[in-house]
Amino acid sequence: MGKKIVVAVTGASGSVYARRLLQKLEASPAGIETCSVVFSKNARDIWAFELKETVEETGLTFQVFGPNDFFAPFASGSAGYDTMIIIPCSMGTLGRIAGGISDDLITRAADVMLKERGRLIVVPRETPYNLIHLRNMVTLTEAGAIVMPATPSFYSLPANVEEVVDTVVNRVLDLMGMEQNGFRWGEK
Image (cartoon, rainbow, N blue to C red):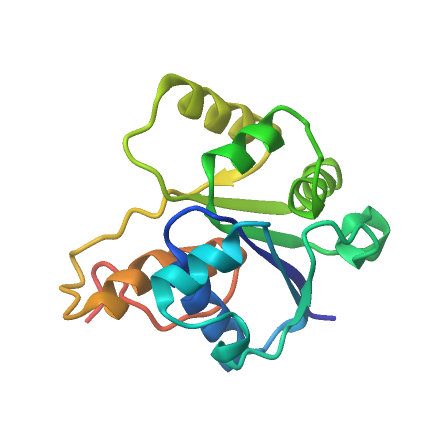
């Protein structure tokens, strides 16, 4: 049986990271049984502003759930989802998860992932961090989440924006335990 994944997109800047992750997951479905997607209330507007296209125009085929659809399968631990990625993750969403506040489908699914000891990967896209942000990240780390800021690397010598974005997305794929052909330090 393959992985059951939920990808959540929040209203933080950095929709390009979410789009690229979804493209890579769709292009390489090996090992994926289910991939569901949920957008926060503001995520669709930010996506359209930053990417100059609507979510529907991307042509992705994953099932998309509304931000308040608590009947989505991943709102319950019994559905057996093993991985959730929140990319980009706004500091508001991160703070609500750290505080145990499940006021929408994204925060509920993150709470489920933590209580079921699944893999929760949050990709905050904010700079600089204030002390509250840092404490919330520590709280999530202590609860079992992986905090992976959207901080690109440059030792692969990326030639364009997509390659810079891939330095973050490929690390997310690594953390999910999925094969990817990105740059590996020390390999030719």
